[in-house]
Image (cartoon, rainbow, N blue to C red; front, side, top):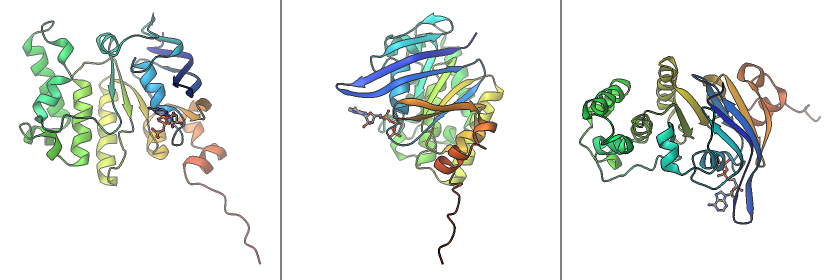
Length: 246
Ligand code: ATP
């Protein structure tokens, strides 16, 4: 059984239909990427899956129909989103931002369980532990992204959705985040990643969907997609040089 199954998803902002027809799946312990240009509907797809935006079509998570659920219910079921541009609470400490990721667990689980997960996040991102009392807004862009991922993990998601985790980061930091994503996968975490950095996304994911104009234009194993001439030309900068004019 697939962990996430999306069929014929549609979502609109008033009269603007941003997602016209998207079907996709994510398996247990699978890393799947959605790539595509600005405005293709990638972010809207994640918003619809996580209940931030009303949607039509069919969304199933772990076999249950979840179309139109609330964001709180999504988190409760094990779907957590690391949003674009991170959306941290800038004046709150690193520690408190992380704890907010676990808000739905308070009262239901022991403090020890939550503290253990906090320690897990610090094991994954040792640099964060050094800054635990600092306001999130004082961290570098790369560290803020690590914090945003850590906050997402504090929800103990079965599926972690990430919107442009590499956006605006320096190449070295990108390497660091990619390494972390591999670590997460090794630990059994399922990931659905939206990314404009197609090269990195195709490197990290096993399967990918290429979105254009609110639809899935192409899909498949990343090893195959990375060789596709259309994908190379449009997303990997592997354009064919036109013959020189004389
Ligand atoms: P990006 O990388 O820019 O986030 P995207 O593929 O994630 O691109 P979406 O953000 O999902 O694309 O946007 C899809 C379409 O919906 C675009 O045409 C965009 O202009 C439109 N759109 C996005 N957000 C809104 C909004 N809040 N109100 C109205 N239209 C919107």
